[in-house]
Amino acid sequence: MEKIRLNCLYLYLFSLSIENWSPWGDKTSLFRPALIFGILYVILSFSNTRLNFRIENLKHLLKPTFFIWFWISLSSIIYSSINNVNYHFNYTFLSCIISFWLLSNDLNRYPKLKDHFLYIILINGVFISFLSFFQIGVDFGHMERQSLLGNNANIIGLSSSISLLIIVYLIIENPKQFKKIRYLLILFIPFLLQTIAKTGSKGALITLSLSFFIYFLTLNKPLKQKVPLFILGIIGFLYGAIYMLQNEVLAERWSKFVETGDTTGRAERWQFAFEVFLYRPIVGVGENGLAHLASSVFGGYDPHNVYLYVLATGGLIAGFPLFLFLYRVFKRALKNKPIWKSSLHLVLFFIMLIFWFKAGGGLNSKMAWAYFALISYQPLTYSKKKKHVISNTRNKN
Image 1: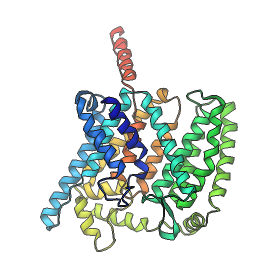
Image 2: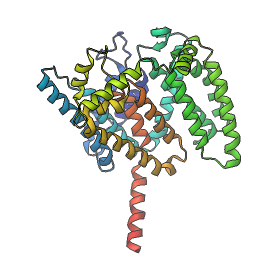
Image 3: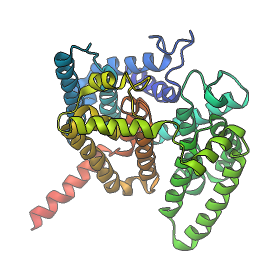
Image 4: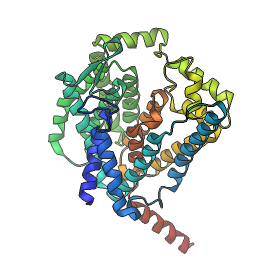
């Protein structure tokens, strides 16, 4: 049973970047592979609630997230009742928190799962890059931006960027001592670059540039190795950026962004969300309230910024727990750097912060919550050793 549950988890993680895909072509279908594997993973987790739903090492992360969901839901109910607006229950955000809970426990129980997670991300990135290259399941949206299997172009670009980062990590740091065979991963880099370019995602290009800069800057290598690798990394990125900007769609969008600061409508949405926050800064207006207020201004109500979204829907009462959660994830990631023996997880944390700064529906992104589980990963054996050391130190004193 446990093997079946973990296989469902692997398939769920693989399908996150293409979670809207359905063999029947309807992204709202209940028969989407990502949804099916996710539901099976949760259901099978009830076979051992004591281990799979344990909260011992996760209380400080789960409490603020559940409170955010509770308060935004309560604000929605209150606003809907007062203003006679239909109430819609956000089960997606709740399912994201539950998946974060389960995945965090599995990562803590099975240390090898951390590596498997990274390999799944890499395989998924290569898979979607091949789909892009051979024009399989390709859709074209605004300005001929390419998306795949009915999924958002920005998500495809982000997934490809992270896969590219993992390739660099495996080649340079070689955590599993793969020897020379790891250099074959270089062959996949052009496929990933062309996928990012075809999505026309400015965010993916910005994320890729900043994450690579931070990665090489914090590289866990002696200085005499770090400097040449840093220079080589800059040269490699510049070559990759020039290659990607040969794509007309990305080049045009990037040119508009650099010359005019064009945010493709995000700035207006951010301003509106901030004004809604100022309208009810303490309690917020709830998701239904934000949708109601935005209905006469925008086609959709999501401000494409998770921080502003939480502040607008839940006010400071929800905003504080959100920043507390992120602080605790970062603090835990810093403490766990000896486990990773790398700064990769810290770079992934930075990438998620950027993603939440510009993503539509980011709070309901199962992919983001899965990454937060990975970033805050801490094996139970490590926790026990740490407690044992602290206990011995106190006894001696």
